[in-house]
Image 1: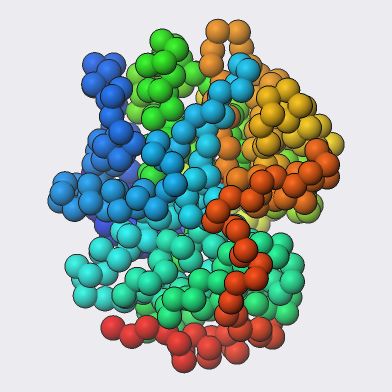
Image 2: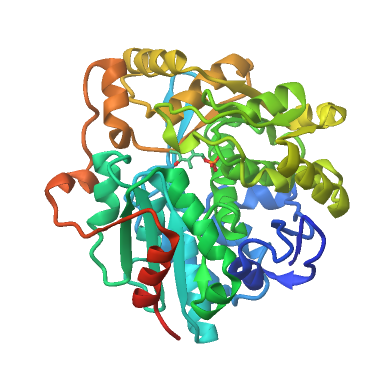
Length: 465
Ligand SMILES: *Cc1c(COP(=O)(O)O)cnc(C)c1O
């Protein structure tokens, strides 16, 4: 499989180069040249497969520059850290299926992709005899999943900036109690946006970036999308096998459009109609649900909600979908993204039919999130985290008789205990991974919000090839 950029200036590169490039060199996003199709017969032979076997079948169709044995080993190693035999099990609550994606080390769905990406980086760096210094800013969840993805790895150091005392105590401890030598947590005296701006500044320093082999781990990396395609197919197969239903809908709590874009790829791969619709669920930061419903993609101010991992207004993966919406025309994609950059708005009303073939969408209010958590708990004795509740609420609106609805559960409720408590009047049970975490030893550097200071810190602690 060859990869190309949505903006057309990078083309014919193999998977491993696409992974190491991250963002395409022309500013676009990398995508596979074609989407492999899976016929009904092939799909039927996958029904009995374990998660890791299925992951190999899917990923190997997008990767032809890693030997099969190595790829299977990378996959096995990545999912051995999950604490459930099915990796991403389905829970059945009334007429909804809850796809639990939170059985990885940091209890959020980002582990599914970042455990794999960490091992993949390690493997590629070994092959190329090189090193990587990962730099990122986090508002909470991504930081810990990224840190757990690369902790203890020989050729990688990771530097994660978080806003001092503006992440939850559990989120802070999930990052700072990882004491491996290659992990550097920096609390900055500022906001998440300040952290993001510092990271952008440092990445903008091209000489520094190449001298220190700086890399990013954010959701634009194609390997992350690819790893997420697997659980869509896995849960379709589960429903086919256990309920003999061959068409399903998915509801996806959405922020950066990464997870639901993986669903879109799965939809294109599988036989027509296997995935009927994708429900795009946002919180009150509703740029994407407005886009689906009105055909206009336009930013607004970011609001703080109880589902902070979705408090996003410009979705970093949106450009990939836009490229498909423009029938794979890189010039039009680039022009539209430039227009969005300049004006904060693009009008895609002429594409409405196309959009509605694949998606439904709803923005969910904070009151609706609270009510959903409460009702679900009363009815099914099952505790939803606030992100998952956004998806469940939207799913209810679009659910159709006779079509199973699978709701993606993107975080364990214990990660957002206070929001859950506010809804149901008790804290969720604390899973083993979080037990005693607040009392554990931690390590973190507190720094002023100053890009030069942070760049100097990186110089001192960077890994050298
Ligand atoms: C990141 C995240 C999301 C949003 O996923 P995107 O790929 O950004 O759309 C939803 N829920 C949780 C818990 C997350 O951490």
